[in-house]
Image 1 (cartoon, rainbow, N blue to C red):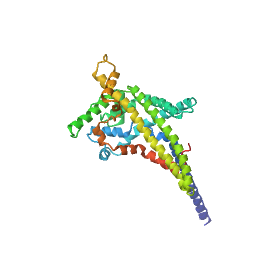
Image 2: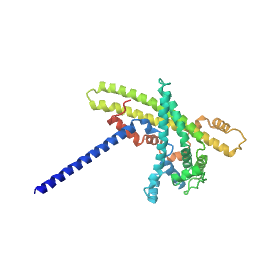
Image 3: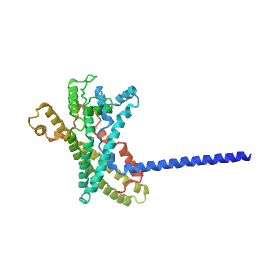
Image 4: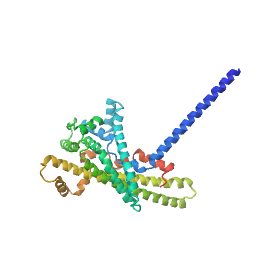
Length: 367
């Protein structure tokens, strides 16, 4: 009897210890997750950094090869044919590439800011623009092969994997654009195929064409970081004024006073991030158009002929400067995509929504 009681007591003590250990482990994991989220959201500019490559590009290229648009039905059929692993195969490699490029960008931006800020302490927007330009240029040099992969994928050559596209860039594998397996209107198909062939052939090998990417990212990230810096300061001022206004109008409602200014602050930051991303895309279009003009010039004109810059100047006179800022996609391709409103909303993404929730109900940003 006594032995049984002792055994039961020992088992009860061990069970209690196991429960306490599990509780401590869960608490530690919760603290780690909270700190990780806080670290991730503490620099909201990182949430809206334009990426060089994405899984959607390879899926869109694969859909073009099959003569289809990138639709939920196409993705379902792809998963049915190749299994669920086809999704991570298309999305994990670009995520790793973007993480590497992001590390280069943020490290260079931080170092550049620390060097420039003492000389331009009273001009934070200029500091952000100069640091962003330097960081963008450094990232572009590292990202030149990724930029060529992007051009190959946008060229619609239909690479079945990221490794296939990377091998084409570094080994110089020549590819041909396959004709569509589905009949389309002749004029529309000719327009799409001509555009994709031009873009695909424009891609260099390895680090070829790095100068175009460097000029594009210097311009784009200088604008991107300066817009976000202005947005950050506007959001801080708006939060202070909103706090004073709400305190005067709803002084007895502690919940409204606590959350409303932070929601307002987060919405301005997210809007600024979306605007900065759109500005980056718009600033990069002239460089992509110029690169395409020079590429066509080099194919059609002997090396001893006039400079390719003459072709760029002639094109600007014929079509106007605004033509360099148009979307490089043909109109028929654009009509198959989502509306501008949905595309803009897509730039917010789950990370933007998560930041709004964290800013409204979490500790939020202090400055």
